[in-house]
Image (tube, rainbow, N blue to C red; front, side):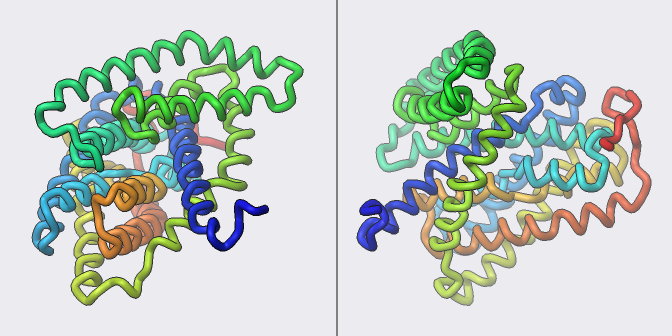
Length: 357
Protein backbone atom coordinates (compact mmCIF):
# COMPACT_ATOMS: atom_id res chain seq x y z
CA UNK A 1 0.00 0.00 0.00
CA UNK A 2 3.01 2.29 -0.31
CA UNK A 3 1.47 3.50 -3.57
CA UNK A 4 -1.28 5.18 -1.56
CA UNK A 5 0.84 7.17 0.89
CA UNK A 6 -0.03 10.84 1.38
CA UNK A 7 2.69 11.99 -1.01
CA UNK A 8 1.36 9.77 -3.79
CA UNK A 9 -2.39 9.88 -3.15
CA UNK A 10 -3.21 12.79 -5.45
CA UNK A 11 -1.15 11.32 -8.29
CA UNK A 12 -2.70 7.89 -7.70
CA UNK A 13 -6.23 9.28 -8.00
CA UNK A 14 -5.30 11.18 -11.17
CA UNK A 15 -3.71 8.15 -12.87
CA UNK A 16 -6.48 5.74 -11.90
CA UNK A 17 -9.00 8.37 -13.00
CA UNK A 18 -7.30 8.58 -16.40
CA UNK A 19 -7.69 4.82 -16.72
CA UNK A 20 -11.35 5.27 -15.80
CA UNK A 21 -11.71 7.76 -18.68
CA UNK A 22 -10.37 5.19 -21.15
CA UNK A 23 -12.69 2.46 -19.86
CA UNK A 24 -15.63 4.85 -19.93
CA UNK A 25 -14.97 5.73 -23.56
CA UNK A 26 -14.56 2.04 -24.41
CA UNK A 27 -17.97 1.31 -22.90
CA UNK A 28 -19.47 4.29 -24.75
CA UNK A 29 -18.23 2.77 -28.00
CA UNK A 30 -19.36 -0.71 -26.98
CA UNK A 31 -22.88 0.58 -26.29
CA UNK A 32 -23.29 2.14 -29.73
CA UNK A 33 -25.19 0.26 -32.42
CA UNK A 34 -23.78 1.33 -35.78
CA UNK A 35 -26.59 -0.52 -37.55
CA UNK A 36 -28.90 2.23 -36.32
CA UNK A 37 -27.18 4.59 -38.75
CA UNK A 38 -28.49 2.51 -41.64
CA UNK A 39 -32.01 2.62 -40.20
CA UNK A 40 -32.07 6.39 -39.78
CA UNK A 41 -29.18 7.67 -41.86
CA UNK A 42 -30.72 11.02 -42.84
CA UNK A 43 -31.86 12.13 -39.39
CA UNK A 44 -28.67 10.73 -37.84
CA UNK A 45 -26.47 12.79 -40.14
CA UNK A 46 -28.51 16.00 -39.99
CA UNK A 47 -29.36 16.00 -36.29
CA UNK A 48 -25.92 14.75 -35.27
CA UNK A 49 -24.00 17.26 -37.39
CA UNK A 50 -26.16 20.29 -36.56
CA UNK A 51 -26.21 19.15 -32.94
CA UNK A 52 -22.44 19.67 -32.96
CA UNK A 53 -22.24 22.85 -35.06
CA UNK A 54 -24.88 24.87 -33.15
CA UNK A 55 -23.39 24.33 -29.65
CA UNK A 56 -19.88 24.78 -31.04
CA UNK A 57 -20.73 28.14 -32.60
CA UNK A 58 -23.03 29.52 -29.91
CA UNK A 59 -20.75 28.25 -27.14
CA UNK A 60 -17.81 30.03 -28.76
CA UNK A 61 -19.75 33.30 -28.99
CA UNK A 62 -20.93 33.05 -25.38
CA UNK A 63 -17.41 32.34 -24.11
CA UNK A 64 -15.84 35.17 -26.12
CA UNK A 65 -18.43 37.56 -24.67
CA UNK A 66 -17.00 36.80 -21.21
CA UNK A 67 -13.47 37.76 -22.37
CA UNK A 68 -12.13 34.25 -22.80
CA UNK A 69 -9.42 33.72 -25.41
CA UNK A 70 -10.45 32.42 -28.86
CA UNK A 71 -8.71 29.11 -28.09
CA UNK A 72 -10.52 28.72 -24.75
CA UNK A 73 -13.82 29.75 -26.33
CA UNK A 74 -13.51 27.23 -29.14
CA UNK A 75 -12.73 24.46 -26.67
CA UNK A 76 -15.74 25.43 -24.55
CA UNK A 77 -17.87 25.20 -27.69
CA UNK A 78 -16.45 21.73 -28.30
CA UNK A 79 -17.43 20.66 -24.78
CA UNK A 80 -20.99 21.91 -25.35
CA UNK A 81 -21.13 19.91 -28.59
CA UNK A 82 -20.80 16.64 -26.64
CA UNK A 83 -23.76 14.36 -25.91
CA UNK A 84 -23.99 11.53 -23.38
CA UNK A 85 -25.13 8.46 -25.30
CA UNK A 86 -25.55 6.31 -22.20
CA UNK A 87 -27.68 8.80 -20.28
CA UNK A 88 -29.89 9.61 -23.27
CA UNK A 89 -30.39 5.94 -24.15
CA UNK A 90 -31.15 5.01 -20.54
CA UNK A 91 -33.75 7.77 -20.32
CA UNK A 92 -35.45 6.57 -23.51
CA UNK A 93 -35.44 2.98 -22.22
CA UNK A 94 -37.11 4.06 -18.98
CA UNK A 95 -39.76 5.88 -21.01
CA UNK A 96 -40.21 2.81 -23.26
CA UNK A 97 -39.67 4.87 -26.41
CA UNK A 98 -36.20 3.75 -27.45
CA UNK A 99 -37.53 1.84 -30.47
CA UNK A 100 -39.74 4.65 -31.74
CA UNK A 101 -38.40 6.59 -34.70
CA UNK A 102 -37.47 9.39 -32.28
CA UNK A 103 -35.44 6.95 -30.19
CA UNK A 104 -33.75 5.34 -33.19
CA UNK A 105 -33.04 8.77 -34.66
CA UNK A 106 -31.57 9.97 -31.38
CA UNK A 107 -29.26 6.94 -31.16
CA UNK A 108 -28.01 7.46 -34.69
CA UNK A 109 -27.53 11.20 -34.15
CA UNK A 110 -25.63 10.47 -30.94
CA UNK A 111 -23.24 8.23 -32.91
CA UNK A 112 -22.50 11.07 -35.32
CA UNK A 113 -22.21 13.51 -32.43
CA UNK A 114 -19.76 11.36 -30.45
CA UNK A 115 -17.53 10.62 -33.44
CA UNK A 116 -17.40 14.28 -34.51
CA UNK A 117 -16.65 15.50 -30.98
CA UNK A 118 -13.97 12.88 -30.29
CA UNK A 119 -12.24 13.51 -33.62
CA UNK A 120 -12.60 17.27 -33.15
CA UNK A 121 -11.00 16.96 -29.73
CA UNK A 122 -8.10 14.99 -31.18
CA UNK A 123 -7.49 17.56 -33.91
CA UNK A 124 -7.76 20.43 -31.41
CA UNK A 125 -5.16 18.87 -29.09
CA UNK A 126 -2.86 18.07 -32.02
CA UNK A 127 -2.89 21.72 -33.11
CA UNK A 128 -3.00 23.55 -29.77
CA UNK A 129 -1.69 21.17 -27.09
CA UNK A 130 1.65 21.20 -25.29
CA UNK A 131 3.45 20.33 -28.53
CA UNK A 132 1.35 21.96 -31.25
CA UNK A 133 2.22 21.18 -34.85
CA UNK A 134 0.98 24.49 -36.24
CA UNK A 135 -0.85 24.99 -39.49
CA UNK A 136 2.08 23.60 -41.48
CA UNK A 137 1.58 20.24 -39.79
CA UNK A 138 -2.16 19.93 -40.46
CA UNK A 139 -1.70 17.82 -43.58
CA UNK A 140 0.74 15.46 -41.85
CA UNK A 141 -1.60 15.14 -38.88
CA UNK A 142 -4.52 14.36 -41.19
CA UNK A 143 -2.52 11.68 -43.01
CA UNK A 144 -1.42 10.09 -39.72
CA UNK A 145 -4.98 10.10 -38.39
CA UNK A 146 -6.46 8.57 -41.53
CA UNK A 147 -3.72 5.95 -41.79
CA UNK A 148 -4.12 4.99 -38.14
CA UNK A 149 -7.90 4.74 -38.38
CA UNK A 150 -7.72 2.57 -41.51
CA UNK A 151 -5.18 0.18 -39.99
CA UNK A 152 -6.91 0.06 -36.59
CA UNK A 153 -10.33 -0.62 -38.11
CA UNK A 154 -8.92 -3.23 -40.51
CA UNK A 155 -7.19 -5.13 -37.69
CA UNK A 156 -10.25 -4.88 -35.46
CA UNK A 157 -12.67 -6.12 -38.12
CA UNK A 158 -10.42 -9.01 -39.16
CA UNK A 159 -9.04 -10.16 -35.82
CA UNK A 160 -11.35 -9.16 -32.95
CA UNK A 161 -14.22 -11.59 -33.73
CA UNK A 162 -11.92 -14.63 -33.99
CA UNK A 163 -9.63 -13.69 -31.11
CA UNK A 164 -12.62 -12.80 -28.95
CA UNK A 165 -14.24 -16.20 -29.48
CA UNK A 166 -10.91 -17.99 -28.91
CA UNK A 167 -10.24 -16.23 -25.60
CA UNK A 168 -13.87 -16.72 -24.55
CA UNK A 169 -13.60 -20.50 -25.03
CA UNK A 170 -10.05 -20.82 -23.67
CA UNK A 171 -9.40 -22.29 -20.19
CA UNK A 172 -7.65 -19.07 -19.14
CA UNK A 173 -9.51 -17.50 -16.21
CA UNK A 174 -11.20 -14.31 -17.44
CA UNK A 175 -9.08 -14.57 -20.58
CA UNK A 176 -11.54 -12.63 -22.74
CA UNK A 177 -11.76 -9.69 -20.32
CA UNK A 178 -7.97 -9.59 -19.95
CA UNK A 179 -7.55 -9.63 -23.75
CA UNK A 180 -10.06 -6.81 -24.23
CA UNK A 181 -8.52 -4.77 -21.40
CA UNK A 182 -4.99 -5.01 -22.85
CA UNK A 183 -6.27 -4.33 -26.37
CA UNK A 184 -8.11 -1.22 -25.20
CA UNK A 185 -4.96 0.12 -23.55
CA UNK A 186 -2.95 -0.65 -26.70
CA UNK A 187 -5.47 1.15 -28.91
CA UNK A 188 -5.41 4.14 -26.55
CA UNK A 189 -1.60 4.23 -26.56
CA UNK A 190 -1.26 3.74 -30.31
CA UNK A 191 -3.89 6.38 -31.07
CA UNK A 192 -1.90 9.00 -29.16
CA UNK A 193 1.65 7.94 -30.05
CA UNK A 194 1.22 6.64 -33.60
CA UNK A 195 -1.96 8.25 -34.87
CA UNK A 196 -1.72 11.74 -33.41
CA UNK A 197 -5.18 11.25 -31.92
CA UNK A 198 -6.32 11.53 -28.32
CA UNK A 199 -5.96 8.34 -26.26
CA UNK A 200 -9.71 8.32 -25.66
CA UNK A 201 -10.20 8.08 -29.43
CA UNK A 202 -8.38 4.77 -29.46
CA UNK A 203 -10.38 3.44 -26.50
CA UNK A 204 -13.62 4.61 -28.13
CA UNK A 205 -12.64 2.94 -31.42
CA UNK A 206 -11.80 -0.30 -29.62
CA UNK A 207 -15.28 -0.27 -28.10
CA UNK A 208 -16.90 0.28 -31.50
CA UNK A 209 -14.97 -2.65 -32.99
CA UNK A 210 -15.65 -5.06 -30.12
CA UNK A 211 -19.35 -4.15 -30.37
CA UNK A 212 -19.39 -6.04 -33.69
CA UNK A 213 -18.11 -9.30 -32.19
CA UNK A 214 -20.22 -12.31 -31.12
CA UNK A 215 -18.87 -11.97 -27.56
CA UNK A 216 -20.04 -8.37 -27.14
CA UNK A 217 -22.52 -9.20 -24.36
CA UNK A 218 -19.89 -11.12 -22.37
CA UNK A 219 -17.44 -8.24 -22.74
CA UNK A 220 -20.05 -5.71 -21.66
CA UNK A 221 -20.93 -7.66 -18.53
CA UNK A 222 -17.34 -8.24 -17.45
CA UNK A 223 -16.04 -4.83 -18.40
CA UNK A 224 -18.89 -2.97 -16.73
CA UNK A 225 -17.99 -4.66 -13.44
CA UNK A 226 -14.36 -3.56 -13.69
CA UNK A 227 -15.08 -0.08 -15.00
CA UNK A 228 -18.06 0.95 -12.88
CA UNK A 229 -16.92 -1.01 -9.83
CA UNK A 230 -13.42 0.47 -9.62
CA UNK A 231 -12.05 2.93 -12.15
CA UNK A 232 -14.98 5.07 -13.32
CA UNK A 233 -15.97 6.10 -9.76
CA UNK A 234 -12.36 7.21 -9.23
CA UNK A 235 -12.62 9.32 -12.39
CA UNK A 236 -15.72 11.06 -11.05
CA UNK A 237 -14.04 11.50 -7.66
CA UNK A 238 -11.10 13.12 -9.42
CA UNK A 239 -13.48 15.40 -11.33
CA UNK A 240 -15.21 16.37 -8.10
CA UNK A 241 -11.90 17.08 -6.39
CA UNK A 242 -10.81 19.20 -9.36
CA UNK A 243 -13.97 21.33 -9.38
CA UNK A 244 -14.15 23.97 -6.67
CA UNK A 245 -17.25 26.16 -6.52
CA UNK A 246 -15.41 28.57 -4.21
CA UNK A 247 -13.15 29.50 -7.12
CA UNK A 248 -16.11 30.88 -9.05
CA UNK A 249 -16.23 34.66 -8.99
CA UNK A 250 -19.47 36.57 -9.48
CA UNK A 251 -18.64 36.71 -13.19
CA UNK A 252 -18.00 32.97 -13.08
CA UNK A 253 -21.47 32.33 -11.68
CA UNK A 254 -23.03 34.46 -14.40
CA UNK A 255 -20.96 32.58 -16.97
CA UNK A 256 -22.22 29.28 -15.55
CA UNK A 257 -25.84 30.39 -15.91
CA UNK A 258 -25.36 31.79 -19.43
CA UNK A 259 -23.40 28.75 -20.58
CA UNK A 260 -26.06 26.40 -19.19
CA UNK A 261 -28.76 28.26 -21.12
CA UNK A 262 -26.66 28.20 -24.29
CA UNK A 263 -25.94 24.48 -23.81
CA UNK A 264 -29.64 23.66 -23.55
CA UNK A 265 -30.93 25.93 -26.32
CA UNK A 266 -28.15 25.23 -28.84
CA UNK A 267 -28.46 21.45 -28.63
CA UNK A 268 -32.26 21.53 -28.92
CA UNK A 269 -32.10 23.98 -31.85
CA UNK A 270 -29.33 22.14 -33.70
CA UNK A 271 -30.54 18.57 -33.30
CA UNK A 272 -34.19 19.62 -33.53
CA UNK A 273 -33.60 21.47 -36.80
CA UNK A 274 -31.81 18.43 -38.19
CA UNK A 275 -34.79 16.27 -37.24
CA UNK A 276 -37.23 18.69 -38.88
CA UNK A 277 -35.12 18.65 -42.07
CA UNK A 278 -35.45 14.85 -41.99
CA UNK A 279 -39.25 14.88 -41.90
CA UNK A 280 -39.96 14.79 -38.17
CA UNK A 281 -42.84 16.91 -36.89
CA UNK A 282 -42.29 19.69 -34.35
CA UNK A 283 -42.98 17.54 -31.28
CA UNK A 284 -40.73 14.71 -32.47
CA UNK A 285 -37.96 17.19 -33.30
CA UNK A 286 -38.25 18.71 -29.83
CA UNK A 287 -38.19 15.26 -28.20
CA UNK A 288 -35.06 14.30 -30.13
CA UNK A 289 -33.38 17.62 -29.33
CA UNK A 290 -34.01 17.25 -25.61
CA UNK A 291 -32.81 13.64 -25.80
CA UNK A 292 -29.48 14.98 -27.09
CA UNK A 293 -29.27 17.67 -24.39
CA UNK A 294 -27.41 15.81 -21.63
CA UNK A 295 -23.61 16.17 -21.72
CA UNK A 296 -22.96 13.54 -19.05
CA UNK A 297 -19.72 11.60 -18.98
CA UNK A 298 -18.62 12.63 -22.49
CA UNK A 299 -18.75 16.30 -21.52
CA UNK A 300 -16.82 15.51 -18.34
CA UNK A 301 -14.19 13.62 -20.30
CA UNK A 302 -13.65 16.45 -22.80
CA UNK A 303 -13.49 19.00 -19.96
CA UNK A 304 -10.98 16.84 -18.09
CA UNK A 305 -8.78 16.63 -21.18
CA UNK A 306 -8.98 20.42 -21.43
CA UNK A 307 -7.82 21.05 -17.86
CA UNK A 308 -5.08 18.40 -18.20
CA UNK A 309 -3.75 19.93 -21.43
CA UNK A 310 -3.92 23.45 -20.01
CA UNK A 311 -6.55 24.53 -22.54
CA UNK A 312 -8.96 25.92 -19.93
CA UNK A 313 -8.54 27.45 -16.47
CA UNK A 314 -9.67 25.95 -13.17
CA UNK A 315 -12.53 28.47 -12.94
CA UNK A 316 -13.74 27.60 -16.44
CA UNK A 317 -13.51 23.90 -15.56
CA UNK A 318 -15.69 24.43 -12.48
CA UNK A 319 -18.27 26.30 -14.58
CA UNK A 320 -18.31 23.53 -17.18
CA UNK A 321 -18.81 20.86 -14.51
CA UNK A 322 -21.84 22.85 -13.37
CA UNK A 323 -23.19 22.91 -16.94
CA UNK A 324 -22.77 19.13 -17.24
CA UNK A 325 -24.62 18.56 -13.97
CA UNK A 326 -27.46 20.95 -14.88
CA UNK A 327 -28.06 19.49 -18.36
CA UNK A 328 -27.89 15.93 -17.03
CA UNK A 329 -30.40 16.60 -14.25
CA UNK A 330 -32.85 18.48 -16.50
CA UNK A 331 -33.02 15.96 -19.35
CA UNK A 332 -35.14 13.17 -17.74
CA UNK A 333 -37.96 15.36 -16.35
CA UNK A 334 -38.27 17.38 -19.57
CA UNK A 335 -38.40 14.20 -21.64
CA UNK A 336 -41.11 12.78 -19.39
CA UNK A 337 -43.22 15.89 -19.96
CA UNK A 338 -42.71 15.76 -23.74
CA UNK A 339 -43.46 12.05 -24.04
CA UNK A 340 -46.66 12.47 -22.06
CA UNK A 341 -48.01 13.47 -25.48
CA UNK A 342 -48.50 10.76 -28.13
CA UNK A 343 -45.58 10.12 -30.49
CA UNK A 344 -45.10 8.06 -33.64
CA UNK A 345 -44.51 4.36 -32.80
CA UNK A 346 -42.65 3.70 -36.05
CA UNK A 347 -39.02 3.73 -36.94
CA UNK A 348 -37.56 6.08 -39.51
CA UNK A 349 -38.23 3.44 -42.17
CA UNK A 350 -41.86 3.34 -41.25
CA UNK A 351 -41.62 -0.10 -39.70
CA UNK A 352 -43.69 -0.98 -36.70
CA UNK A 353 -41.90 -0.35 -33.45
CA UNK A 354 -40.98 -3.09 -31.00
CA UNK A 355 -41.29 -1.70 -27.53
CA UNK A 356 -39.03 -3.29 -24.92
CA UNK A 357 -40.74 -5.48 -22.39
